[in-house]
Length: 225
Figure (cartoon, rainbow, N blue to C red):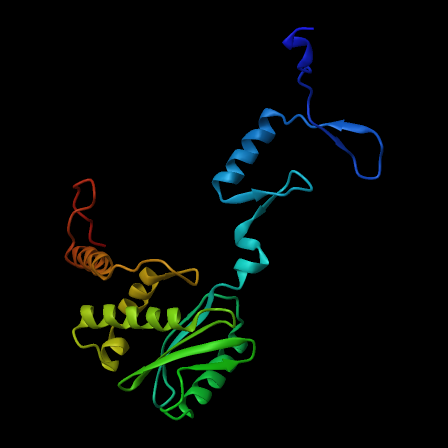
């Protein structure tokens, strides 16, 4: 008996079909293999029971690890900035803003900066006459959220120079633009203050170039309407 006789011939993988004793051969077609490769590139993981792909972004564990909304309001309860990362209707948003502002403004300053609200946790910080509030899932780390708030405020202070409430009232679009650079889809996107400052400066240059009628990317002059 030779060594070759002891090695069995390679056979295709066989799996029993559910509810049937007939064996079924698993041979993926080239089209299926390409689809699986694209799914893996998008961050999907294969299921063991069936050759299906479950995207991680839709899993229950990771769907809750997200900021629900961010609010910036004054001591009088006036909302200066609001950003929602979960689908809320206009009625739900108005009700949520009223409940959140009332609950936070009524809290004494000696209490902690975390308060439970419904099935969420409200993490807030006061800077002068402004309150920065972020609503997260009840399993989120409050200290990380506080650092995100501090990170955003430092970028605002660096851009405006000792930022105040009037800066956010008359330049609210800049505050939204900076927030979109910091947070994307409710997750922390960028931690570098220098990089965000550079991106905001480039955006300002594009706006100024559009105002004065500068040239386009290909060098052709802009046509004034």
